[in-house]
Length: 135
Image (cartoon, rainbow, N blue to C red):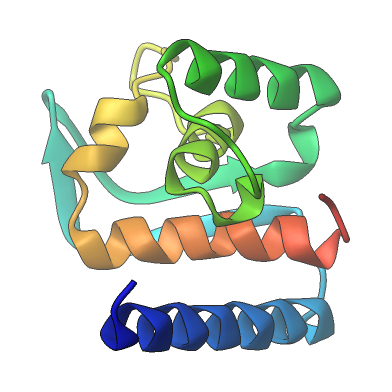
């Protein structure tokens, strides 16, 4: 392992610790509303905001997300720091529906989002887990 990689890991670990401390001092937010700077369109669905109800998730959701990732060959060491876990968590907790009342936010929808919005969403999911003292 190169010296650069060691520094990167140390910086990443320090950022994770700082983020965890920050998350534990923030007020609990069981529902998160993500507002886009500009309307976002994917597969003929245009949104200006999405609502995520983290509190609605259950142990069954956790198990289903974990099983899906294992089927895809993704090993989870710390789910709260695994982007794929957090993204599937967001998909399951999204309460936004289309005009017909159907769920349209899926993993591909999230992957198509601008990176700034995607990272903000995953950060909120991670903060929710860390505030709850999970894992």
